Amino acid sequence: MATGRNHRPATRSRGIPEATVARLPLYLRALTALSERSVPTVSSEELAAAAGVNSAKLRKDFSYLGSYGTRGVGYDVEYLVYQISRELGLTQDWPVAIVGIGNLGAALANYGGFASRGFRVAALIDADPAMAGTPVAGIPVQHADDLDRIISENGVSIGVITTPPGAAQQVCDRLVAAGVTSILNFAPTVLSVPDGVDVRKVDLSIELQILAFHEQRKAGEEGGDAGPDPAAPPVRATNTTNTTSTNTGRKGPDGDMPAVMPA
Amino acid sequence: MATGRNHRPATRSRGIPEATVARLPLYLRALTALSERSVPTVSSEELAAAAGVNSAKLRKDFSYLGSYGTRGVGYDVEYLVYQISRELGLTQDWPVAIVGIGNLGAALANYGGFASRGFRVAALIDADPAMAGTPVAGIPVQHADDLDRIISENGVSIGVITTPPGAAQQVCDRLVAAGVTSILNFAPTVLSVPDGVDVRKVDLSIELQILAFHEQRKAGEEGGDAGPDPAAPPVRATNTTNTTSTNTGRKGPDGDMPAVMPA
DNA sequence: CCCTGTGAAGTGTTTCACAGCA
DNA sequence: TGCTGTGAAACACTTCACAGGG
Image (tube, rainbow over all chains, first blue to last red; front, side, top):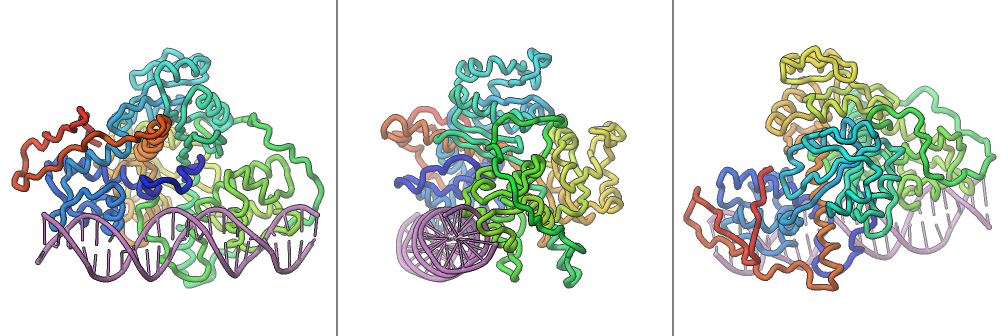
């Protein structure tokens, strides 16, 4: 999941389990849909179905927020929408900056659901001088040289990184230095950040590989047995030598790097 | 995490924990980088650092795959790359179809890391007739009417959904009917699928909401205490009657309760 | 002596099942 | 009666700590 530091390492009372937090947005979405249809109340069973979880889990999750339901009846939709929104911090405005306006960055800038819930695309930043000034999704792209100023002037605390992997750590460092404390990373790179900064990553290639794993299982299964057992696995190198390994000097050798991002 | 059915509900021997499977791609990426730099062996400590996990976890993870290390030395990079690739099913070709060629779909089609490891964009599909024939990332877009044929002709078992949310379930149903058994869903919708079909979702808006939650905590914390405990939470509707009608009332005593917004 | 591999302990999450309230 | 809220059991995952092989 996230790469960042541990959140609240088993701390004080008000602690909502991370797994629960991750589901709240799901509940909120389902509730919002009900709200739009003017449904006044909903049972844990119904809501759970709409959110794609089971009802025991949902009730347990809600129990961490407080007792917001009514026995024998269910939950008041509007009330719950508000409580969850507040818990998630969506009752305030979150200016977001997107760094790296390639295909993906542009797609995100155009993404409607972005602006919807308290999130506002406050700035688009790219390292290509040719892009500066060009509007994407109605917002002019600004040059990376001004990153620091842009972040502080807009009070951005959430940054989205959609740069090529070679640039991600550097961009991350600059964002953090400028005051960003939450990062959503789309670059296939492990970011290292100081304590107190949260990083979440979204990685297409990892998701596909996980699917491939299960897909392979399915295929191997139906044939009865005789799974994929490749003729001859490469022999393990017996060779020992080397040491050094020159730690990970940052600076990627970003040789080629396709438009968006290589593996 | 995923929305799909439970994977292997506590089943047979060869079971690698799901959490481990989710990390294998991370290890693989780190190992590939080492391999490119011709590093022959790596210790659990070094590799763990490169992958952003701790070494005990990494060793435990590898122990599920078998004993591929050498005590006192570490792991053979090439050998491990091969073993993990095989375990993940990346030694075979996975034709993938992307449905919904908007901003995001196009970004994914252009995504380099996509093609890299066994995954191949076999088809782009969109419902807009105007797009049919237009090449995106060098691949001509095909019309959704032919979805069935396209999927079977190309032997696609992994589908990527990047349609608007309203179309996602329908597209999903059609993909499944055509033989797809793994779906990567970018639409902010809960998909329901029959048993045996895996769904993973990638949801920008959920990730942002999770970040906002933690961000809010940080903000509330630095003031010493006096956490966010709003003077008085909005009153719960006591009204059992009603349907329809303005359930707007609920303004929070703490003043606002800004309209929270639809999906 | 270094570093892997792994039991065992610790922590977090899900599910069960039912008491209790509207 | 119907549905929430929640202890307690079951399960999953992580971390510890060290035995043991190279």
